[in-house]
Every structure is written in C-alpha cells, then in structure tokens.
Image (cartoon, rainbow, N blue to C red; front, side):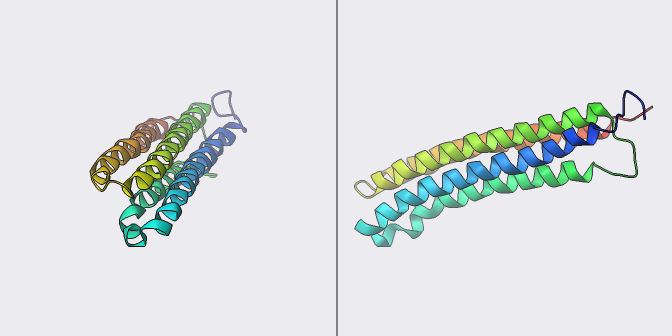
Length: 162
C-alpha cells in the first residue's frame, strides 16, 4: 500500500454508499409521511379524490430509487481484489453526499408541497395542475443530485493506484 492507496480508503467509498442510501431514503420517508398526512385529511372530506392525490407519495418514492441507484453504482466500484485510491474514495463520498442531500431536500419539498396542495385541492380543483408542476420542480432537485453523482462516479472509476 502507498500513500495514494491507503488501507482506509474504502471507508470513504462505503460512507458514500451509506450517505446516498440513508439521506435519500430519509427524504423519501419525510415526503411520504408529510404528504400522507394531507391525503388522510383529504380522505375524511372527499374520499373520491384520494387516488388522484397519491402523486406526491409516488414522487417521494422515486427519490429513494435515485439513492439506491447511486449506492449500487458506488458499491460496484469497490472491488476488494484491487487497490482502491483515496481519490476515488473521496469522489465516491462526494457523489453519495450529493445524491443523498439533494434527495433529502427534494423529499422535504415534495412532502410540504404535497400536504398543502392536497389540502387545498379539497376546496379548489384547479390547484391540481399547479400542484403537479411544483412537484415536478421539487423532484428535479433529486434528479440533479443523481446526475451529479453519476458524473462523479465516472471520474472515480478513472482513478488508479500507481
């Protein structure tokens, strides 16, 4: 082992795997729970609108899938039979944090927009289109993190030990 490929370098790669999965899943859970509270409130007044109001919950679940994809890709780059450079470990950590934190932010946004708009949907049906548009923009936050993490992961695969 050299200074470029220390024995502790895979720790940072696995920290990227964990942070991608944990933070994006927490964001998805937060979005699902907050939007679910609004849907439960809607169901007491107009139960026929429940199925149409599940869009925020579905979009929150997609955020967790982004974290899963990134964590699987990062874990695929960790091969115990090969040396693992510290540079790749830090890039994998950054990729996991980028995907995880944007997933957390997107889930938060989806949950609060979903809760508010679903409650407003009881009184005014025209709010549905604006709700979907705002949810799409909130979902794109997580998609940006996924794209950044994928770009970073390709740079990490180029790193080699001397």
